[in-house]
Length: 151
Image (cartoon, rainbow, N blue to C red):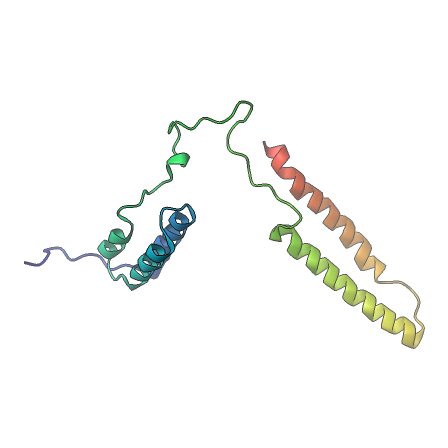
């Protein structure tokens, strides 16, 4: 006998949401590689909401460490978990600095070519290098200091 109420069809966004959830559980060690790839495959083949629910039915919706009162107490002197620590290797800082460096190298090379071929000696590239560099330095200091200020 078939189910009297057919299951609701699922969408790509629901499949993507379940795939992200599986990635989090894999990263937290609840799934091994083989089980993760199997469940991910079943997720993208799922046609109904019921099929998606079967993929994650034995996984918790939220991490127990995220639930308050789960027995995990912050250490003395801490207000909670520390925020993310940004460093100069963080892409949020590396990308703008790489862009700054690339543009300034290009400006310098153009100036050098003009200087060597036409004799134009005014160092106009410093008007790009200097103000933008000051601004980049201030933004970088602000970004690196923000986690300490917000605590």
